Length: 69
Image (cartoon, rainbow, N blue to C red; front, top):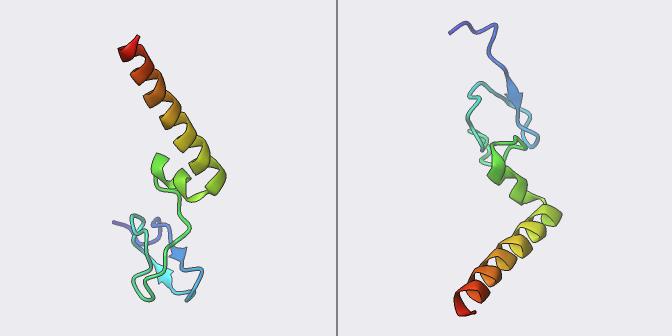
C-alpha cells in the first residue's frame, strides 16, 4: 500500500491521525469517530431512528392484521 494515497482521518476529540479507514473508534482515546459506515450509521440521528421504528411497527402491524383477517 502506498502511504501517499491512504486517506487520513483525524479524531475530533484528541486530534490524532488515524490511518485505518475501517476504524469506527479512535485508537488513542476510544471515542466514536463521526464516519458514516453503511445504512445502520443513519440510526445515530434521532429523526431517522424514530421514522425507522414507526415504519417497522407499521409493517409488523400490517402483517399481524393480514394473518388475522
